[in-house]
Image (cartoon, rainbow, N blue to C red; front, side, top):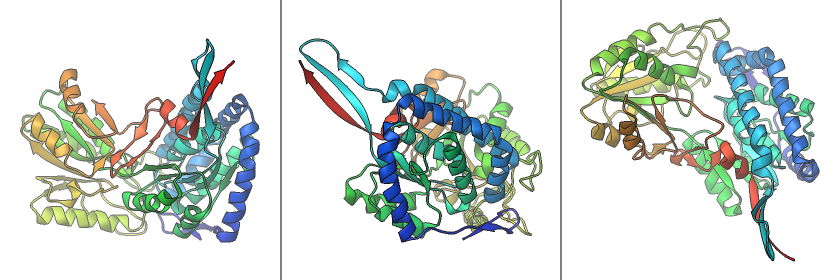
Length: 454
């Protein structure tokens, strides 16, 4: 399998893909390894995962450069991702002992009662390319902490980063048969879905997630799906500083070239501040540096998937044909690499694909609304339900709207952020199940009830 640099279309290297024989061998080894790994005291497993984070930090430049070379994100954003993963590991390991230890519900009397959180067994983690350190950490770290072994398949577009993760986990002390990596594209994923595993956790698109769920549901095994979004944001008429809001929300749209499941994908602005907001937003976008991902200071770089620029161009064409106005960008950048200009569209509506279908790129539609009620109706008019944001100076106004938004995560005066202390979960076509927080730590366990009568 060739590993391609999306900024240059050059072949970085080639790697050997797994086949059925090697997958079966790895799954069998993981089955044996899980039993041994689960016997390692939780405190020791915590220390090993903390050492893994330390190794990532010590080797951050190497990790960031490898990540940038195969996914195309700016080098500083790759560093930020590694740092973010280390912060999540810090929270997960700090809370693992309290959240994964036996929980006494009745500790005195004739009959005592407790809950034990036992591992699922061998966990399959089919991961994503856009944030391989972060979305991987959401799954394999709590899975390992809980005593599971993990068969980890990185996206074929982030294979080298997957190998980095494997290397440093093993150096930290995770046994090779407790964490093993499966290399390949869709065919290897299909082999994992056919294998005898105890839980399936996928991060990626709705279409692939739906297919995975249909295939593994017959096994009656746990399945967690972290899928895409069409995440809305509303700017109310009472924001204190329109310019600051425009700067912050533009970052929520274009960070990582918009290739985030929680990137802002559609914006609704109250008519009273619409003109000022759009002017400030476009002015901010036009300041973004654009170019090679390895050049320091670059904010928008290459898209990871070769087919994505053409898809974004089709969304622009559809919107303009239906009456949208293009304020900046809108074109594929000629030459080598997968580049698309940061793009802003106005006069948009919900007949346009850019306001309904996930873009996953540096493009945004901004729509004028007359009231909170109109904004709320439009924000909920989607098959997705990952995140939604409200910008207003009034907390009660924000909470009134947030309480009615059908999304797994809601934001007031912020957007496009994830906290390890809070559950990360989607609704509708954005998936189901939770990672992160105490909920996510226990996602990779099966509770057992103990009734103890002396």
